[in-house]
Image 1 (tube, chains in turn red, cyan):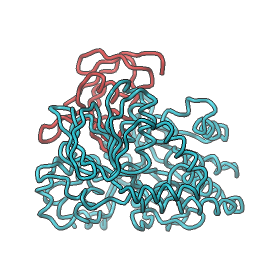
Image 2 (cartoon, each protein chain N blue to C red):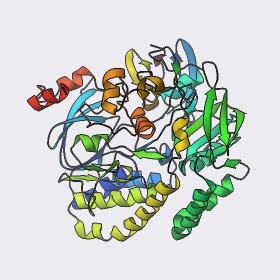
Image 3 (tube, one colour):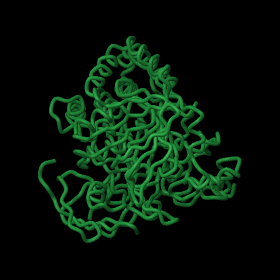
Image 4 (spheres, rainbow over the protein chains, first blue to last red):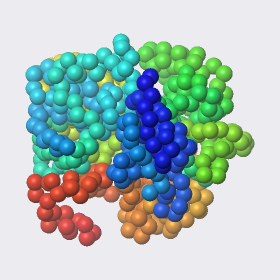
Amino acid sequence: MSEQIALSVNGKIISVPSGATVAVAVMLADEACRTSISGEPRGPLCGMGICFECRAVIDDNPHSRTCQIVCQAGMKVRTHD
Amino acid sequence: MTKEPSERFDVLVIGGGPAGMAAAACATENRRRVGIIDDNPDLGGQIWRGASANPGSPAANWVARVRDAGVRVRCGLRVLHQPEPGVLLAEGPRGPCLLTYEDLVLATGGRERFLPFSGWTLPNVMGAGGLQALVKSGLPISDKRIVIAGSGPLLFAVAAYLRRQGADIPILCEQASWNSIARFGASLFTQPGKLAQAVSLKRELLGVPFAANSWPVAAEGHGKLSSVVISRSGKLERFECDYLACGFHLLPNTELPALLGCQIQHSCVWVDDLQQTSVPHIFCAGEPTGVGGLELSLMEGQIAGLAASGTLSRAKKLFNKRDKLRKFARVLERTFALRPELRRLPFPETMICRCEDVNYRSLAEHTSWRAAKLYTRCGMGPCQGRICGPVTEFLFRWRPDSVRPPVFPAFCESLAALPNPAPTRSELTGAQL
């Protein structure tokens, strides 16, 4: 995990070590991942793809579990959908 | 984009953690067509997430053994359903596929148990293993203040790991009593390997304040966590922090085994001496048969792999070692049993089901998991009750219902890929209760 790659989170450019998951990029952007049914901000809980709290839109794919997907250069991530 | 290929295996292993890798490597001894699928981006499971990059580590050695043995490895794939015996429907990044097997090894691992308290849904309140997984996946935590709380030996391993990465740990809270922990410490003397690990962990954790009889009562902050209130041997103390890493020991992942009809006993998958479940040709190894840690998972995995490939004499040679490790698993369960005070942590407005935002007040009026699901949608969200099911089991002593397909949320396209998408009469009747 030495090389850095860049992607965007809600339009902000974020640089992460290559191999980092999208959840890491969202946390580095200081964003929550999703808004709950009653309007609470939520971030990752289990870190292993089970709780679905870290869902966000990755390259137009909704409900993507950001903790299970590795960042690719140029990815566009949108949170709070 | 090409589609996710469908494939045929003699032995298919679900889960690429220690148990799954050991099973797959051993199953190839009889030169059969062996495959592993895993939901994660890489082999290693949670305990060895990212560790295979360190040459010479046990993780790297097992990954090399799996690859050298010619095991077909497919990551990013999760099983949704078994449309007919011997056929699994899975979904990957490129869509659905069918995987056919003669023998199946379920090595679905474990997950952390979470318990609700005020503020536990705030961002930056995470599982202990959860935060560790994110750090292993690239999250920098140098100079961050991290409170660690909950129960179980994982907390110590996480504390040592986070500290090596530069985190400041103002306190490590264990809900179990000093008495239980002392008995646990004494039991380590019967397990020399575990004792050595404990001694080296203790050395790494010098300077980290440890508190037994202690647990989080509230996480506070606006929009994200800023402090945690701990009940420390009966007194309340507030700690400013960036993260709360909180998990209450581990639970076996039994959803897929249950879907396949394997008998579940005391929340674990029942297996015989050869790690075979109540369903012939389906084996199970590692945490789903009872949480016992790395060494037990590796041992059970090897036995399951050898048994699935018909190498019974070699499997039998490992029985003794496995049975000794299982004794340790029982000690773990006793030591880190949850104290009843934890049932009183949630307030009426504390969320219990995080997917559907169902709070304690709306659940307390119901008398069963099924009624709660019907009236409040508790457990009906994307996690399918994986988080709130064990919570309500602890809080209200509700028992979970049978597992129905798909065992993970799926795209409609994946369900349309079923060979026979029409539901059977019994499935329809079941759906109408």
